[in-house]
Amino acid sequence: MKIYCILLDTMPFCSEVQEILKITGGTLARQVSGCFTNESLIQMFTGKLTSDLEPNGIGYRLTWNRFGRYQISIWSWMKEFIQFYLRDKGFNFVSRNHKEIVSTVLGFGNYPEFYTDTSVDRLDMADPSLKQLLCNNNEGKKFEQEEFDYIDKIQQPSDKNIFHLISYTHYHSAVHSDIHRQKSKQLAAGNRVLELLKHWDFSEPDALFWIFSDHGSWFNPRVDAYPHPQHFYSWVIVKDNSKNSINLVSKVIDIKDFTSYMKLKFDFIPLPEIFASKKRIYLTEDGRMAIDEEHMTTAIACCFEKWKKDFPQQMNYVIYHKPDNCFIQRKAIFDENSFITKVETLSNVIDDSLVNALIQKFDWISK
Ligand SMILES: [Zn+2]
Image 1 (cartoon, rainbow, N blue to C red):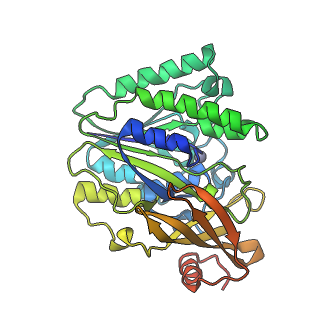
Image 2 (cartoon, rainbow, N blue to C red):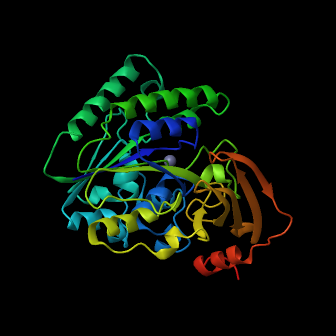
Protein backbone atom coordinates (compact mmCIF):
# COMPACT_ATOMS: atom_id res chain seq x y z
CA MET A 1 0.00 0.00 0.00
CA LYS A 2 0.95 3.67 -0.12
CA ILE A 3 0.95 6.20 2.63
CA TYR A 4 1.01 9.77 1.32
CA CYS A 5 1.74 12.52 3.82
CA ILE A 6 1.22 15.75 1.89
CA LEU A 7 2.61 18.74 3.80
CA LEU A 8 1.27 22.16 2.85
CA ASP A 9 3.93 24.07 4.72
CA THR A 10 2.69 27.14 6.65
CA MET A 11 -0.81 26.97 5.09
CA PRO A 12 -3.17 28.64 7.55
CA PHE A 13 -6.67 27.36 8.25
CA CYS A 14 -8.42 29.29 5.45
CA SER A 15 -11.19 28.88 2.88
CA GLU A 16 -8.84 26.93 0.58
CA VAL A 17 -8.77 24.17 3.22
CA GLN A 18 -12.51 23.71 2.58
CA GLU A 19 -11.70 23.41 -1.14
CA ILE A 20 -9.12 20.73 -0.37
CA LEU A 21 -11.72 18.92 1.72
CA LYS A 22 -14.04 18.85 -1.33
CA ILE A 23 -11.27 17.74 -3.71
CA THR A 24 -10.19 14.89 -1.45
CA GLY A 25 -13.50 13.76 0.03
CA GLY A 26 -11.60 13.21 3.29
CA THR A 27 -12.24 14.07 6.93
CA LEU A 28 -11.10 17.39 8.37
CA ALA A 29 -9.75 17.96 11.87
CA ARG A 30 -7.94 20.80 13.59
CA GLN A 31 -4.52 19.92 14.90
CA VAL A 32 -2.31 21.18 17.71
CA SER A 33 1.15 21.28 16.15
CA GLY A 34 4.45 23.07 16.63
CA CYS A 35 5.28 26.59 15.43
CA PHE A 36 8.01 25.72 12.90
CA THR A 37 8.61 22.89 10.44
CA ASN A 38 11.49 20.99 12.06
CA GLU A 39 9.77 20.63 15.39
CA SER A 40 6.35 19.81 13.90
CA LEU A 41 7.82 17.03 11.75
CA ILE A 42 9.79 15.65 14.69
CA GLN A 43 6.62 15.68 16.82
CA MET A 44 4.58 14.05 14.07
CA PHE A 45 7.05 11.30 13.22
CA THR A 46 8.22 10.44 16.76
CA GLY A 47 4.96 11.05 18.63
CA LYS A 48 6.98 13.09 21.14
CA LEU A 49 7.83 16.67 21.98
CA THR A 50 11.39 17.61 21.13
CA SER A 51 11.83 18.24 24.89
CA ASP A 52 11.15 14.49 25.38
CA LEU A 53 14.09 13.74 23.07
CA GLU A 54 16.77 16.36 23.81
CA PRO A 55 17.42 18.34 27.02
CA ASN A 56 15.41 21.60 26.68
CA GLY A 57 14.19 20.58 23.24
CA ILE A 58 15.45 21.42 19.76
CA GLY A 59 15.73 25.09 18.84
CA TYR A 60 15.79 26.33 15.27
CA ARG A 61 19.57 26.08 14.85
CA LEU A 62 20.58 23.32 17.25
CA THR A 63 21.29 21.01 14.33
CA TRP A 64 23.48 23.56 12.47
CA ASN A 65 25.41 24.48 15.60
CA ARG A 66 25.94 20.92 16.79
CA PHE A 67 26.47 19.01 13.54
CA GLY A 68 27.37 21.82 11.10
CA ARG A 69 25.24 23.43 8.43
CA TYR A 70 24.30 21.01 5.64
CA GLN A 71 25.74 18.17 7.72
CA ILE A 72 23.40 15.34 8.50
CA SER A 73 22.18 15.19 12.10
CA ILE A 74 23.02 12.11 14.11
CA TRP A 75 20.39 11.72 16.80
CA SER A 76 20.77 9.16 19.57
CA TRP A 77 16.97 8.76 19.45
CA MET A 78 16.79 8.31 15.65
CA LYS A 79 14.91 5.03 15.93
CA GLU A 80 11.99 6.85 17.56
CA PHE A 81 10.97 7.98 14.06
CA ILE A 82 7.90 6.12 12.82
CA GLN A 83 9.74 5.61 9.51
CA PHE A 84 11.74 2.83 11.21
CA TYR A 85 8.61 1.18 12.62
CA LEU A 86 7.09 1.30 9.14
CA ARG A 87 10.35 0.06 7.60
CA ASP A 88 9.94 -3.04 9.75
CA LYS A 89 6.45 -3.39 8.27
CA GLY A 90 8.00 -3.40 4.79
CA PHE A 91 7.61 0.29 3.93
CA ASN A 92 10.25 2.26 2.11
CA PHE A 93 10.33 5.99 2.84
CA VAL A 94 10.57 8.57 0.06
CA SER A 95 10.41 12.31 0.64
CA ARG A 96 10.13 15.09 -1.88
CA ASN A 97 10.81 18.84 -1.82
CA HIS A 98 12.06 19.27 1.73
CA LYS A 99 15.47 17.80 1.26
CA GLU A 100 17.33 19.94 3.78
CA ILE A 101 14.91 19.24 6.60
CA VAL A 102 14.27 15.58 5.91
CA SER A 103 17.77 14.56 4.95
CA THR A 104 19.91 16.76 7.20
CA VAL A 105 17.82 18.01 10.14
CA LEU A 106 15.84 14.81 10.71
CA GLY A 107 18.93 12.78 9.79
CA PHE A 108 17.43 10.46 7.17
CA GLY A 109 20.40 11.20 4.88
CA ASN A 110 22.30 8.64 6.95
CA TYR A 111 19.91 5.90 5.86
CA PRO A 112 20.31 5.08 2.16
CA GLU A 113 17.11 3.06 2.17
CA PHE A 114 15.24 6.33 2.84
CA TYR A 115 15.31 8.36 -0.34
CA THR A 116 14.93 12.12 -0.71
CA ASP A 117 14.06 13.76 -3.98
CA THR A 118 13.17 17.21 -5.25
CA SER A 119 12.23 19.03 -8.41
CA VAL A 120 13.30 22.47 -7.26
CA ASP A 121 16.60 23.98 -8.39
CA ARG A 122 18.25 24.57 -5.07
CA LEU A 123 18.14 21.08 -3.76
CA ASP A 124 19.19 22.00 -0.26
CA MET A 125 16.63 24.75 0.28
CA ALA A 126 13.11 24.48 1.58
CA ASP A 127 12.40 27.82 -0.10
CA PRO A 128 12.79 27.61 -3.85
CA SER A 129 12.35 30.79 -5.81
CA LEU A 130 9.00 32.45 -5.86
CA LYS A 131 8.93 32.35 -9.64
CA GLN A 132 8.88 28.59 -9.49
CA LEU A 133 6.22 28.34 -6.85
CA LEU A 134 3.89 31.31 -7.23
CA CYS A 135 4.06 32.63 -10.81
CA ASN A 136 2.26 31.46 -13.87
CA ASN A 137 5.37 31.93 -16.02
CA ASN A 138 7.64 29.38 -17.71
CA GLU A 139 9.56 28.59 -14.54
CA GLY A 140 6.31 28.13 -12.66
CA LYS A 141 4.83 25.94 -15.40
CA LYS A 142 7.99 23.84 -15.51
CA PHE A 143 7.90 23.29 -11.74
CA GLU A 144 4.20 22.45 -11.88
CA GLN A 145 4.64 20.01 -14.78
CA GLU A 146 7.45 18.23 -12.96
CA GLU A 147 5.22 17.88 -9.92
CA PHE A 148 2.31 16.61 -12.09
CA ASP A 149 4.66 14.05 -13.63
CA TYR A 150 5.88 13.02 -10.20
CA ILE A 151 2.30 12.56 -8.93
CA ASP A 152 1.48 10.44 -11.99
CA LYS A 153 4.59 8.36 -11.41
CA ILE A 154 4.08 7.60 -7.73
CA GLN A 155 0.34 6.93 -8.11
CA GLN A 156 0.98 4.10 -10.58
CA PRO A 157 -0.24 0.75 -9.21
CA SER A 158 2.52 -1.00 -7.32
CA ASP A 159 2.82 -4.03 -5.09
CA LYS A 160 5.46 -2.28 -2.97
CA ASN A 161 4.75 -0.56 0.36
CA ILE A 162 5.88 3.04 0.15
CA PHE A 163 5.56 5.88 2.66
CA HIS A 164 5.77 9.22 0.84
CA LEU A 165 6.27 12.66 2.38
CA ILE A 166 5.59 15.33 -0.25
CA SER A 167 6.08 18.98 0.67
CA TYR A 168 4.47 21.92 -1.08
CA THR A 169 6.16 25.03 0.29
CA HIS A 170 4.13 27.69 -1.59
CA TYR A 171 2.64 29.29 1.53
CA HIS A 172 5.98 29.26 3.31
CA SER A 173 7.55 31.15 0.42
CA ALA A 174 4.60 33.54 0.11
CA VAL A 175 4.79 34.49 3.78
CA HIS A 176 8.57 34.54 3.86
CA SER A 177 9.07 36.65 0.77
CA ASP A 178 7.05 39.75 1.39
CA ILE A 179 5.43 40.48 4.68
CA HIS A 180 3.75 43.62 3.36
CA ARG A 181 1.94 42.12 0.40
CA GLN A 182 1.45 38.65 1.79
CA LYS A 183 -2.28 38.60 0.99
CA SER A 184 -1.80 38.59 -2.79
CA LYS A 185 1.07 36.15 -2.57
CA GLN A 186 -0.91 33.91 -0.27
CA LEU A 187 -3.79 33.97 -2.76
CA ALA A 188 -1.35 32.90 -5.48
CA ALA A 189 -0.01 30.18 -3.17
CA GLY A 190 -3.55 28.92 -2.57
CA ASN A 191 -4.33 28.79 -6.29
CA ARG A 192 -1.14 26.97 -7.18
CA VAL A 193 -1.51 24.46 -4.35
CA LEU A 194 -5.11 23.71 -5.39
CA GLU A 195 -3.93 23.08 -8.97
CA LEU A 196 -1.43 20.53 -7.69
CA LEU A 197 -3.95 18.84 -5.42
CA LYS A 198 -6.52 18.60 -8.24
CA HIS A 199 -3.97 16.51 -10.12
CA TRP A 200 -3.95 13.84 -7.40
CA ASP A 201 -6.28 10.86 -7.57
CA PHE A 202 -7.62 10.67 -4.03
CA SER A 203 -9.59 7.54 -4.90
CA GLU A 204 -6.40 5.51 -5.44
CA PRO A 205 -7.09 2.05 -3.99
CA ASP A 206 -5.04 0.83 -1.04
CA ALA A 207 -3.75 4.32 -0.27
CA LEU A 208 -3.86 6.52 2.83
CA PHE A 209 -3.72 10.29 2.35
CA TRP A 210 -2.70 12.47 5.32
CA ILE A 211 -2.82 16.09 4.11
CA PHE A 212 -1.75 18.64 6.68
CA SER A 213 -0.17 21.92 7.61
CA ASP A 214 2.72 22.01 10.08
CA HIS A 215 2.04 25.47 11.54
CA GLY A 216 0.44 28.76 10.50
CA SER A 217 1.78 32.02 9.11
CA TRP A 218 4.30 33.54 11.50
CA PHE A 219 3.54 37.13 10.45
CA ASN A 220 -0.20 37.18 10.86
CA PRO A 221 -0.15 37.95 13.76
CA ARG A 222 3.60 38.02 14.27
CA VAL A 223 4.83 35.09 16.33
CA ASP A 224 6.69 36.05 19.52
CA ALA A 225 7.51 34.47 22.87
CA TYR A 226 3.78 33.93 23.47
CA PRO A 227 2.42 32.30 20.30
CA HIS A 228 -1.21 32.51 19.20
CA PRO A 229 -3.49 29.72 17.92
CA GLN A 230 -2.84 31.07 14.39
CA HIS A 231 0.70 29.70 14.83
CA PHE A 232 0.23 26.30 16.48
CA TYR A 233 -3.42 25.34 15.78
CA SER A 234 -3.17 23.91 12.27
CA TRP A 235 -5.30 21.37 10.39
CA VAL A 236 -5.30 17.91 8.82
CA ILE A 237 -7.44 16.07 6.25
CA VAL A 238 -7.39 12.27 6.27
CA LYS A 239 -8.65 9.97 3.49
CA ASP A 240 -7.94 6.28 3.86
CA ASN A 241 -8.77 3.88 1.01
CA SER A 242 -6.84 0.98 2.48
CA LYS A 243 -7.88 -1.86 4.77
CA ASN A 244 -8.18 -1.17 8.54
CA SER A 245 -8.95 2.37 7.43
CA ILE A 246 -8.25 5.16 9.88
CA ASN A 247 -11.12 7.14 11.34
CA LEU A 248 -10.08 10.11 13.45
CA VAL A 249 -11.75 9.81 16.87
CA SER A 250 -11.86 13.58 17.44
CA LYS A 251 -12.12 16.74 15.33
CA VAL A 252 -9.15 18.07 17.30
CA ILE A 253 -6.00 15.96 17.17
CA ASP A 254 -2.41 16.43 18.23
CA ILE A 255 0.15 16.29 15.40
CA LYS A 256 1.90 13.65 17.55
CA ASP A 257 -1.14 11.34 17.21
CA PHE A 258 0.07 10.26 13.76
CA THR A 259 2.34 7.58 15.27
CA SER A 260 -0.51 6.16 17.38
CA TYR A 261 -2.78 5.96 14.34
CA MET A 262 -0.05 4.07 12.46
CA LYS A 263 0.32 1.59 15.34
CA LEU A 264 -3.45 1.17 15.49
CA LYS A 265 -3.58 0.54 11.75
CA PHE A 266 -0.70 -1.89 11.47
CA ASP A 267 -0.61 -3.57 14.88
CA PHE A 268 -4.13 -2.93 16.23
CA ILE A 269 -2.66 -1.15 19.27
CA PRO A 270 -5.67 0.73 20.69
CA LEU A 271 -5.52 4.51 20.76
CA PRO A 272 -5.18 6.05 24.23
CA GLU A 273 -8.74 6.67 25.47
CA ILE A 274 -7.94 10.34 26.04
CA PHE A 275 -7.74 10.88 22.25
CA ALA A 276 -11.54 10.81 22.03
CA SER A 277 -12.12 12.89 25.15
CA LYS A 278 -13.37 16.46 24.91
CA LYS A 279 -11.46 17.13 28.14
CA ARG A 280 -8.05 16.30 26.64
CA ILE A 281 -5.13 18.64 27.38
CA TYR A 282 -2.80 19.18 24.40
CA LEU A 283 0.86 20.18 24.83
CA THR A 284 3.29 21.83 22.45
CA GLU A 285 6.40 24.03 22.58
CA ASP A 286 8.31 26.70 20.68
CA GLY A 287 11.72 28.32 20.56
CA ARG A 288 12.36 31.63 18.78
CA MET A 289 15.80 32.09 17.28
CA ALA A 290 16.13 35.62 18.68
CA ILE A 291 15.70 34.21 22.19
CA ASP A 292 17.61 30.91 22.09
CA GLU A 293 18.95 29.39 18.85
CA GLU A 294 19.33 25.93 20.30
CA HIS A 295 16.50 25.26 22.72
CA MET A 296 12.80 25.54 23.34
CA THR A 297 11.82 28.42 25.60
CA THR A 298 8.02 28.44 25.34
CA ALA A 299 5.64 25.69 26.46
CA ILE A 300 1.91 25.66 25.71
CA ALA A 301 -0.98 23.65 27.19
CA CYS A 302 -4.46 23.98 25.75
CA CYS A 303 -7.91 22.50 26.17
CA PHE A 304 -11.21 23.04 24.40
CA GLU A 305 -14.84 23.70 25.25
CA LYS A 306 -18.22 24.66 23.75
CA TRP A 307 -18.13 21.92 21.13
CA LYS A 308 -20.59 22.42 18.25
CA LYS A 309 -20.92 20.01 15.32
CA ASP A 310 -17.89 18.20 16.79
CA PHE A 311 -15.63 21.29 16.57
CA PRO A 312 -14.85 23.37 19.68
CA GLN A 313 -15.79 27.03 19.78
CA GLN A 314 -13.32 27.94 22.49
CA MET A 315 -9.67 27.18 23.26
CA ASN A 316 -8.27 27.89 26.73
CA TYR A 317 -4.50 27.94 26.83
CA VAL A 318 -1.66 28.67 29.18
CA ILE A 319 1.76 29.69 27.88
CA TYR A 320 5.00 29.56 29.84
CA HIS A 321 8.01 31.54 28.63
CA LYS A 322 11.25 30.63 30.33
CA PRO A 323 13.17 33.96 30.20
CA ASP A 324 10.18 35.69 31.84
CA ASN A 325 9.57 32.65 34.08
CA CYS A 326 5.86 33.33 33.99
CA PHE A 327 2.60 31.77 32.90
CA ILE A 328 -0.11 33.67 31.07
CA GLN A 329 -3.57 32.47 30.10
CA ARG A 330 -5.53 33.32 26.99
CA LYS A 331 -8.78 32.20 25.44
CA ALA A 332 -9.55 32.04 21.75
CA ILE A 333 -13.06 32.01 20.29
CA PHE A 334 -13.94 30.22 17.03
CA ASP A 335 -17.03 30.42 14.82
CA GLU A 336 -19.02 27.35 13.75
CA ASN A 337 -16.61 26.82 10.83
CA SER A 338 -13.65 26.82 13.23
CA PHE A 339 -12.34 30.19 12.04
CA ILE A 340 -10.84 32.28 14.82
CA THR A 341 -12.85 35.36 15.79
CA LYS A 342 -11.17 36.65 18.96
CA VAL A 343 -8.17 36.09 21.22
CA GLU A 344 -8.17 37.54 24.70
CA THR A 345 -5.48 37.55 27.42
CA LEU A 346 -6.93 36.94 30.88
CA SER A 347 -5.79 39.10 33.77
CA ASN A 348 -4.98 35.98 35.82
CA VAL A 349 -4.15 32.37 35.15
CA ILE A 350 -7.31 30.51 36.19
CA ASP A 351 -6.73 27.01 34.81
CA ASP A 352 -4.50 25.22 37.31
CA SER A 353 -4.87 21.95 35.39
CA LEU A 354 -3.12 23.52 32.38
CA VAL A 355 -0.32 24.94 34.54
CA ASN A 356 0.13 21.56 36.24
CA ALA A 357 0.21 19.75 32.90
CA LEU A 358 3.05 22.05 31.78
CA ILE A 359 5.03 21.65 34.99
CA GLN A 360 4.68 17.86 34.85
CA LYS A 361 5.77 17.64 31.23
CA PHE A 362 8.56 20.20 30.82
CA ASP A 363 11.47 19.73 33.19
CA TRP A 364 12.96 23.06 32.04
CA ILE A 365 10.12 25.03 33.63
CA SER A 366 11.53 26.68 36.78
CA LYS A 367 9.75 25.29 39.83
ZN1 LIG B 1 6.84 24.87 8.00
